[in-house]
Structures are given as structure tokens and as C-alpha cells.
Length: 467
Image 1: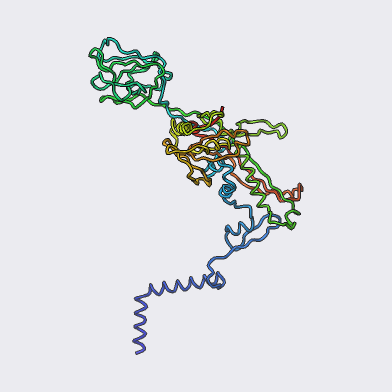
Image 2: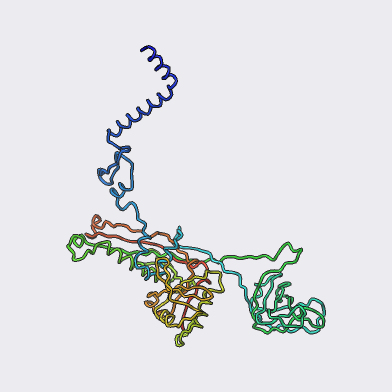
């Protein structure tokens, strides 16, 4: 009986020998793991520890280097997300710097930043010589040569709309509600050769020319090709090269050892001083970003060059003038928003930053259904007052920087889509060991950033000045 059980067990083990081998290997792995971890329940990996070197530096033993050990052994080695802390320090006071930080910056490998900007091809020109009415047309396709203040914007097959000059219906006798349209046949040194698309019929000849006076506005429209046309006049666009310089902004904070150890009535620490220093540093950068002059100058004391960044005030491509002695009206405000939001390919939501005088004049307006105000919008960590019109929206904000530089009645409209920050040295902090170097018995911290701002599409931005 016992022999029968033994033989049955042997037959079962032969049939399941792979399963038995797998279980044996797993038990062996578990025993080895227990030996490595010293039998500690739940221990799977060795935890490293920090030991001090013979002279300088710390070392990690019995485990890998982790972020916790890095903070313990070298607290200044790992940088925090500096910008995210900076943008929370009084953002309303430095809107230009604030927006540029939220938008992100491009790294510059040099203190000198070369960048390209391209404008759209002009679409309007002014007629500088009268177009005389056609008399006694000699052929069935009247043509004439016109002269404008910018002939180069017109190419063959372009169509031109003549503003405020009536065209004619298909019968050639009745004036139309639509403006006169011209078709460009060619362009050379003598002028632009055109035909009238919806001109009057004279002596049985259709599409002659009505009288058009000098000063009329010509609007370039779409091209009209014929059925067999394969090619079209070329369109070329070359960007214009511009340059700005990165400026090295620095701020240093110090606190003596005795000051740090002394009892204080309130908890004024080194961190509080750092926050105040960052605010002062940002205020200085805001003024440089707005009104700085791009120059490179030799410092005879330091025996090296100093770079100064150029401000965006001088980079803006459009101007709007307000009369200081005349009250601002809703009509004038509509014109301002029209100029800011049209004539360029920018966005329809722009930012108006101005001094207290300009903001006061805008705030005194009695807004109507044409322009609405009073809605508050929060963007880039800043609270704006929104102005709405048929042309677009302006986010309004007071900037005391304009008051400080004596421009309280002026402002600037910027398109946030086309403002770019270049950074050669990102904002960083560095502990200075002035005690060890024998300079001063203080804790010292220096903050540094080398950067500049550029307007990539100048005509999307506008200065508001007063006379």
C-alpha cells in the first residue's frame, strides 16, 4: 500500500516537474532578498546616507543619489522654479515684465539679439493725378495709365477698388451703389496701366473711365486670372533685420550675522528682504523694458563693455495723438480703438498700458452701447478693465512707470501675441560666501538676469502721445 502511494507520488512529480522547479526558484529568490536587506520587513532597496569628505564636499554611501539627499548635502544645487515665484510678487506694478514671463522666453546664445520682423504688403495708395473721363473712345477696350504714391504695390491681374467713386450698372448708364473697380494690365516706370471693370458706356463703348480726382484712395484687392493662366506675378517678402541688446540686471541682498541672530519684534527675515529686492529689481527692469536705449558703452573704471537694452516704446510702429487741451470723447476713443485694432494682422485683443492722466481721461467717458466698459478680466496674473468696441477689445491698466518718467498722459497699446523676450542668463540666485573670503560677516545673496524684449510685428503695437 505504501509502495503504491510512493509510486503515485513519483509519477505526479514527473508530470509536474516544471511547476516544482518554478516554485523552488521563487523560494530561493525570496531567501536571497531577505539576506540582502538584513531581514527587515518590507525593505526592498538600500537607503543612501550623506557623509562629509576629508576636506570639501559631501558623499553619498549605501544608496543612490536622490533629490532629498541633494537638498541635504547641497541645498543650493537644485534650483526652484524661480519665475513662478517671481510672477507672484506685485504683478500689477510691472505688467510688461509680468506678461513677458508668462509668455515664456527664448534663449539667446549672445548678449546681442538679432531678430527679423516682416510687415504685410501695403493694400492702399493715393491717386496723385486725376483720371480724366473718357472722351471719344477709339477702341473697344479703353485703357489708361494712373499714377499713385505707391505704384509698386500693384501687379498685373490685381483688382483695385476706388473708394467713394461710383461705378456703373451693367447697362453702362446707371450709377451703381458699388464703387468703381479697376483691373491692372501692367506696371512700368511710367505708371500703372488699368482698365475699368464697371465703368460707364460712352458712344457705345463699354467700361470707359469716369472722372476720378487726385487724392482718391485706391484699395488693392484680389487677383483675377483668365482661364488659360498658369502663372501669376511673383510675390516676394523679405523680413527686416533688427537688433537689441540684453542687459544684465542684478540685485544683491545682505544681512549681517548679528542681525540674523538678534531678537525681532516681527518676523523680518532674509526671505522678506529677498522679496522686497525682487520687487525693486522688477520695477527697474520694467522701466528699461519700456524706455531703455540700446547701446554698448565702454566703462573706463571696470575696463569692460556694458550693455543697455532698448525699450519697446521706440519699437512700436504706429502712433496715435491726443490733444491735451481737448476733452477725450467717445468718438475719439472709437478712433483710438480703430487705429489700434485695424491696419495690421494682429489680434483683436490688445493691452493698453498708460499713465494716471491717460487712464483718468478714459475713465471719465460716458460709455454707450458703442463702447462698453466696467468688466474685469484676469490674465497673466493681472486684473484688467476691459473696453469693448466693434473693432476689438482693449485691456486697460494703470502703470505708474509712465508717471515716474513724466509721461502720465501717454500710454502704449501692445499686442501680447507679438511680444518676445530673449534671455541670455535666466533669472537665478547665488549665495555669496563673503565670510569665508574675509570681505564682510554677512549672509549675501545676488540675483541676476540678462534679457531683453522685442516687438516682432511693430505695426501691431501703438504709442499714444499728447500734444
